[in-house]
Length: 293
Image (cartoon, rainbow, N blue to C red; front, side, top):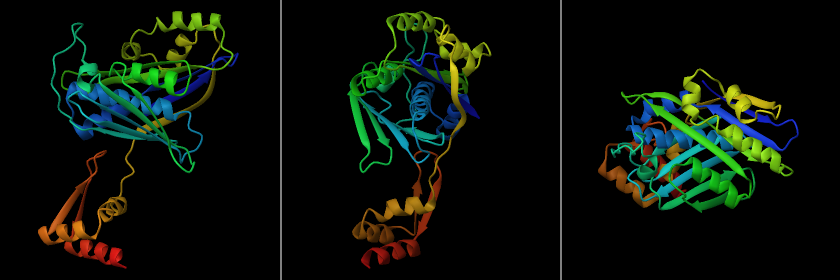
């Protein structure tokens, strides 16, 4: 199971969340069977959602990230709750494009550079908070960093990585989210900038059998970091037949009657986990009767 750890500097000016999300991204790949560049993009989004959700106050709170851009992947949606459960899907799972000149997967081109990043936080208020920014690069980590800078005015460094094997399985995945709190000094900022240079690639860091604790100690070297909390996190969908039925009922009597008259049985699939749910004519008649009441 993947692990996420949060820590704060001894002077309280810097907070960091770090995650080894390998198992999460592996589970996503097992479900969706995407091409390599889609695994990298969706894996980064899932990792980012866990890092951002680490600051949620309640287990009932949720955060949803969406990227809609002009790249061939199309819409990417991920969601994470305060209990460490995340899920996600891409509109197009199979995208084949050339590697970048440095030999790495070209996530930016696959995602697209013209589009929006949307962040939806449901934290128990009357209405969810919705923030959005134009994409900076489509590489995702830079876009998350820009979101915090422009929408929440929090100086942030985000690093995300997914290493895909030649057979398209997932070798390593992880990331960290570092934020400066009010009161951080110029000296502290300079120290962090130098420390970050020692973690050039989060996946290569894990490839050296280093842990999330090593990431924190390296990025906050000289800050005597204190662990705030740690938790196991996972890819887990919360879909049920009852929830799918509610979504089906929402289309209204007319469309339900049309489905009933055209099909002996209809199949509804969950985009997040690929579970299939089946509804018979009798099921549809029951839903129609409920609506007519």
